[in-house]
Image (tube, rainbow, N blue to C red):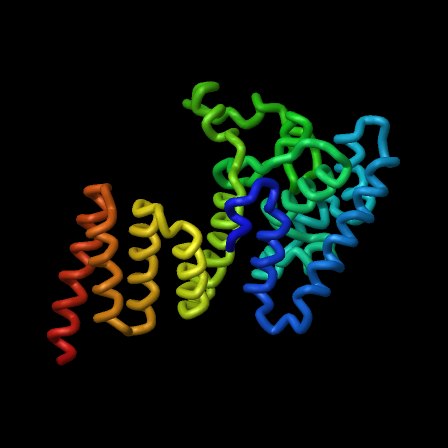
Length: 259
């Protein structure tokens, strides 16, 4: 995914994620062209929707059916991360809806970037915070949790790079696969994430731990032990290393019993 190194590439990355969700897509180039055409149409409506251009972006999406009631009455599936499905059904999760907000805003000549806020992806639109689920502006003070300082909140509101954006999209899909015990699919998503962050040992160690967990569920104990060992070797966190080494010892005892 070369797009992770390019600025403002979130929509391009979201379209690649859609192709991971739907690998049987017959014509990826036509799919991409259709999505960009729909986004441009939304931007055209946004430019005449409101005298405040930023408000116009949100208003155009609400008029297109992306209202909060529609978002809260849904059972989340992998499709909610598929940009084509999101546009067709006017439903999504915060990060997939954020991709739409950013795309429409940028097509209107406005500044927009993602905010990797814990638990709920946000958007900065013309330096104003937006909740992409409700398509409403958010006051920073509302986000300050008990026990946090403004400095803590400031760290949560830093711009998200395209790399962190796509890793989070893949994290959502991986969590879905694991929750539904689709371990092979989870392993595929871990491989995508590892390719994206090949120079980040801390993240690779965490991915190796998850890889080990998946292989355990599939009954491949020797392969799982190798993954946990790689985790222990890569991580700089003593607790994660201890847990990984403990899993290796457990799996080796299990393998000996099986033999």
